[in-house]
Image (cartoon, rainbow, N blue to C red):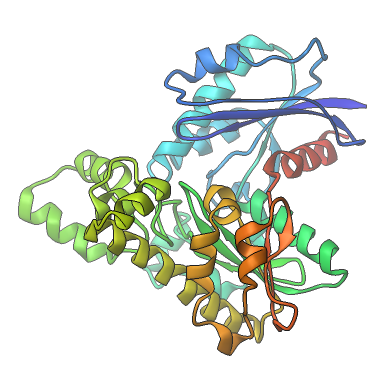
Length: 361
C-alpha cells in the first residue's frame, strides 16, 4: 500500500486528496479557497495522521520531453522553468508548491503527472503548427491541457455506456477546454501551445490571431510583461463583459438584468463550445456522446442547454426536465437522442494518483 497526497493547485484555490493506492480509498480530502500564499495554504493541509508515501502533482507544462509522468528531479524543475512563459499562472504555482513540499516533507518522493500526457496520442496533423522548423525544434507544438480531467471523463463515459465511444469532453469552468476522444484516445483538444488558447476562460483570452498582439505592442510600445498581464488577467470573459473575475454566474446575473456586454460574453463562449462540438464530430467521423464537466459544465443547466441548442442535426437532443432538475452524475439527453449527453463530476486527483502509483510501484 502507498498513501499518495495529490495537491491540485488552482489559480486561487488548493484542493487535495490523500488516496491509499492501489485500493483508491480516499483517506482525506480538503479544499482551500481564495489562496494568496501557497506555502501557507500547503501548511494547512490536514493529513488526518495518515503517513504520506508520495506527493503527486497535476503539473501543467514542461515541453516535449515531459509529456508523461516523472519523478521530480532537477531536469523536471528546469523544464517547468523553461516553459514558465507559456503557462505563467500555472507553472509558477507548481514550482512554488513543489519547493514547499520538499521543505515540508523532505525525502518523500515527488511525482509530476503532466496534463499534456493524455494528449500525446494526438496525430501529427492535429499537433503540428505551421511555424518555421526552428520553432518546432524548440518545442512549439499543440500540447493540450486538462488531460487528467479529459482522461477521467473518457473512461467514465465508456464505463457508463458499456462500449468505446466517440466523445466530446467539455471541461467548462474558470479554465475551459474541450477534447475529442475516440475510443479512449485524445485526437484533438482546444488548448494548444499554452493554456491561454482555445475557448475563452474567465480572465484569459482564448484563440487569438497573434498579429493582433504584435499590432497592439507596436502601436502602444507595450512590453512583453505588460501584454502578458493584460491577456492573462483582463482577457477572456472578464475582458468581454467588463465584469472582474469573469465568473459565469456573475455574467448570467448581469445579462438577466440587461447588461449587453455580459450577454455578448456568454454568447461568444457558447458559440465556441457549439462550433467545437461540430468540428470534433467531423474529426472523429461521427459522435456518440457529449459530456459536460467542470464547475460550469457540471452545474449550469442553462449553459448546457445553450451549448446544445441547434445541434439536433448531429443527433443531440436534451431532455429539459433531466437537464434542469437532475442532480449528480446523470444523462441529460432525451431517450430518443442519438447522441448521449451527460453531466458528470470529474476526478483529476484519482487519475494523478493512478499515474504516480504506476510509476513508483
